[in-house]
Image 1 (tube, rainbow, N blue to C red):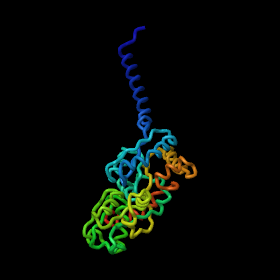
Image 2 (image 1 turned 120 degrees about the vertical axis):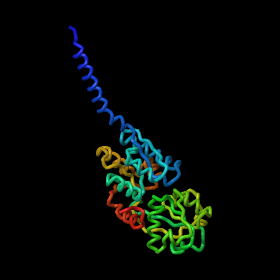
Image 3 (image 1 turned 90 degrees about the vertical axis):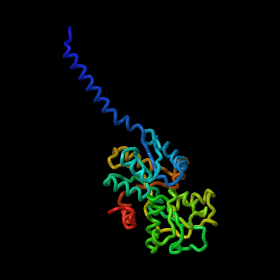
Image 4 (image 1 turned 180 degrees about the vertical axis):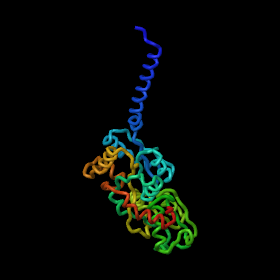
Length: 293
């Protein structure tokens, strides 16, 4: 039987449309074959990669997807990467979470945090004998970490202001090292008189004998505050969101493999968190002039 040209064209168009629909149906699944993770660069890139590798392999098994770590150049880049769908999950500090949530109009969800992050601290360090309290920093040179760091800038600045020390007006010079370990190096090397960093990195550097606490000493430890968390976009698939949360919460220090992961993350366990925990961080950022109301 002879097929008309019109019927042939119709058949081809139908086939093409069907193929297009099939491709469209498979596109999201294919695009989400890789789960992309990043972190604020508060330590050296090689250290961040080392810390994440076992966790990434663990998450792959739990969520059934390939997990890749994507380093970023600075704190702001981690915020933009999550908002613009370049990555799927980010290890944020409290302040970077607040910035991301603000930039996205409340479209970022913090999933879990280390138990230590519910009561986190910053430490102020120096090599000078004449610096023993925050007020002694007047007229001195000082280093924060990154400008967007919660524990390396925002909260130290907040506690300085509470002690009536305005870093911009009362100190001889302030600098931003970019990372916590770099702040320690700047103080130890005599580039600045003092500096502030997060207590977790400080404890790690002391334990690894990378700093001598008899030479570089802590002279002030801040009160506790909420800090780091693992955050995702609020519109993430609910099932995937739950799988990720469950995976973190299931890590058990009694299991040797899990303990190795937890040790690298410098915690004993992960706990759930929520956006409301970071209201005080947001207020501190506004009071310090680091976040517009």
